[in-house]
Length: 212
Image 1 (cartoon, rainbow, N blue to C red):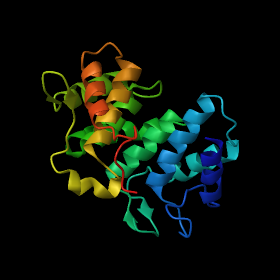
Image 2 (cartoon, rainbow, N blue to C red):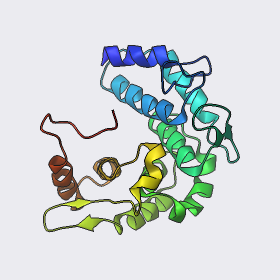
Image 3 (cartoon, helix red, strand yellow):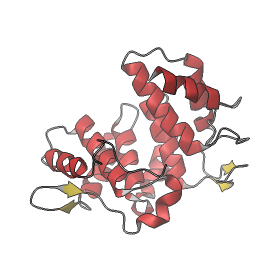
Image 4 (cartoon, rainbow, N blue to C red):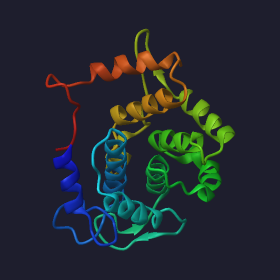
């Protein structure tokens, strides 16, 4: 864990964003958001995390959440879309720096979002700085999309290939819903079925498939 935190620090640019590749000249919002989630969890687990690492990532992501924001360089060059804004807001909320003024606008657009964005949106709305009623509605709607068998349950995007740029997979989406329920409704009957489905997706080495 300490080695991973040190690597994140080496990938951090002056504006607080994390590079996707070590030779990138600008930060990547998705790499930064996942880096912030990892650093915050490590800090909660008692690891010594450089406060500047977390503060820098929070500062960078806070600049990605307003509507009409543009990413000026990198392979995501162009307008920052709603899944990216939701991801940035989710990471900020999880790390104790919520930006609640944007929640209602994104809640109104939730039906057009991929399932993983709706899971993140439900979670941030159910956090302390969110809106419980909107969060419960988003969660309830999300759960109606579940694919259930006698023993397992998972979540499946209608076309997963359209979300490749967000590093999406049905395994990750299902894991996000499990995290959401474990934090907010741990006794929900879907929890054990989600766990069984994810356990079946593990590789013989105990991990999960990725792109590397």
